[in-house]
Length: 395
Image (cartoon, rainbow, N blue to C red; front, side, top):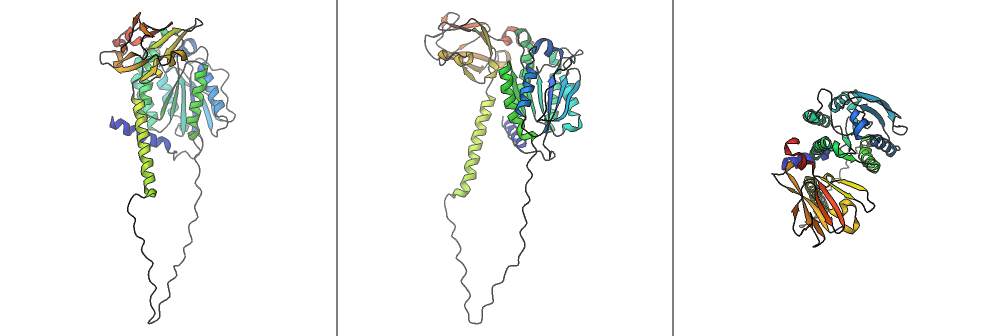
């Protein structure tokens, strides 16, 4: 745990320092997934291009240049080295076969202009090729490729496009956990999930804020004029019998706490406490599963719980203000459960929470397809890990 915390602190310092070998700033590389899984199944609405257009709009006033690539079974440039002030997403991009994500990352890293670049990757995150159709066969090569890119000091932001249907979630959840693991161990890799147009706009704003400090050229320090050396005048020699001037009194060193030296110490302590709290929040386990419910208008809604860490208010998770403070969901560690995690239902008000028709007065572990009643409101908990079995999800 201590080694991981030191690694995160070291990477945070490296990310805060402007690259010495990039005097003109970093070029933006945007890699967009144009594979068959994106066009046919995962992103028929084109959310990845909605995200790219919003990102270019957010960076319109920023200095720097951008190159846009499409990838599938190969990497294909669409826009080459264009100023961000005039850059636009292409109106159309061709279908590029399977999802050779590892090959696309390696091809982009081999470009001569990749040394001073920052990457944005828009994809479902699920590699799949004709020779290796199972995404699990790509996990180790993908980890190696991403870590090699990060070792070169290239920041990477990944926008994961979530699938619209439950039947496509198996591979997506499996690979999303891999991306989350890589992002947790490296602050230079940022992860965003996009399920609708609002998520795409929010992710574009967040990514643009992260990129602004990298694509702009670092400030050139102004030269400081060197002081002109002057000869130190010698005091006149006293005449015979003349008294020498008394030396100035030596200032007495004050004992006690000096505010001038205390300020850096206090700042260091506050920064250390803030970093410890941040690491603690990042290391809390994520919730697993989904919530399924019907709104008061009769529309079915779903909420992926993996976006929350530690615990979440059930009313806030489903967006019902009247149910806030009634119950919460909490992630707990269980070695016997799939992924070593379980979700518990914690009642906060007696008599208002029921599960399977039975009142809940103590913390209760939730299982797949458990139905939770909050007054006249019913929510169903679904856990794909439990439904498909632990052996179906090796990592």
